[in-house]
Length: 243
Image 1 (cartoon, rainbow, N blue to C red):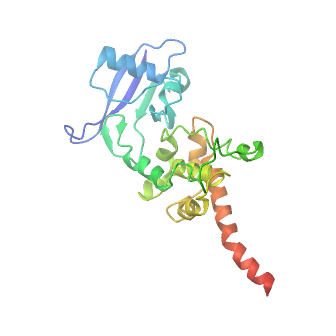
Image 2 (cartoon, rainbow, N blue to C red; image 1 turned 180 degrees about the horizontal axis):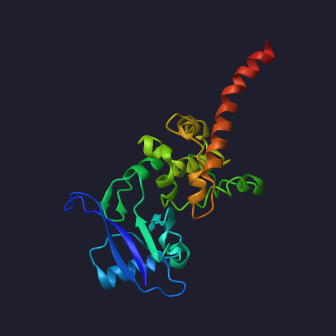
């Protein structure tokens, strides 16, 4: 048996958060999500959490598990149980709606601020906007984000500044800034390379550590900084060259 030590809080009924313990029979290969399902179906139907695909694709079951943000469906109990106990908390920096369910409104609002869609220049072609293999390869490390929120929960800048875009939004911003088909790269760069964007990052690298898809938001943020500084230096270099 493994003890699940789970954060519980219903703002409508509870004066303060608490933890509740459950005993879960562990089988080989059993995931933390399997344990939560067992609790919900067999022990306590009042437990609230999010899950959907059970295949590490949707990102909805991201939570803080035994000291680190992870996907519950991707995390085996045997890998995270410490002294036969798994400690589970909700994502940080977002309001708790109930137990392990948080309000993702601010998370997605920050994502919408960077206009996460292609803004093409000129009329649409008859068939498609083409890219070379080399141009497409620049996006390979940027397109697999599943918007789970693990990086946001682990980010101290998101904790200290509610207006901070977050690693997820900045990664998505670079995905379109680097896209050869996009016509709003300068506009998007101006937003992303701000004090509430890339220059609000403290380079702690928590986002890099916890990403379940092994992406590197920290490197994406660094690329935004370099690109912004380069665009600001070009006019100065051009004036010096003329002088």
